[in-house]
Image (cartoon, rainbow, N blue to C red; front, side):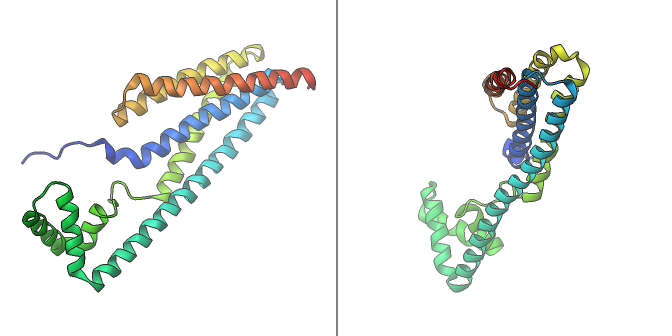
Length: 231
């Protein structure tokens, strides 16, 4: 028996949330740390700001993902309920509707009707959910999974800049955190590209560029703030 082919779309649900969470954790925490350090705050002040950013960011990511994905799930449930009602009201009309969908995809009328009838005999709602509404098990919304993935990966990403703060002298915090964070972003870009089957160089350059830009801007603001209002 020929094994099923491997498709990367099965990773889309958790991969999007995980990459977004890790990227956000690294960029936001590193930017916060670099900005506070550039204002010439001591190590303790930098750590307090970084830990606060980690906790607040992880909770924000979890809440945001859960709310947004829950809204998507609610929409999917409403569409499925509406489709089920339509199937109960006029089964033949729904067969014709599915037949037309398959005709648009290249099947002749007779074969399209045969496919529609057989699929609906097997699982009418599933056939319409997949082919009419575009809802499948792989792509369906999973709020809790997205929330946990975002919060967990955000925290993991945010720990890297904080560990760099602890490992180096105060005078080197800004440079060390920047280097560690950019290297971590490059690794994240390569990993996400490998898992998702995307071009590695493009994905890596994208996350590194935006991370460097964010840290550069916050460093300038932190330096300016520290000069105007000495800490």
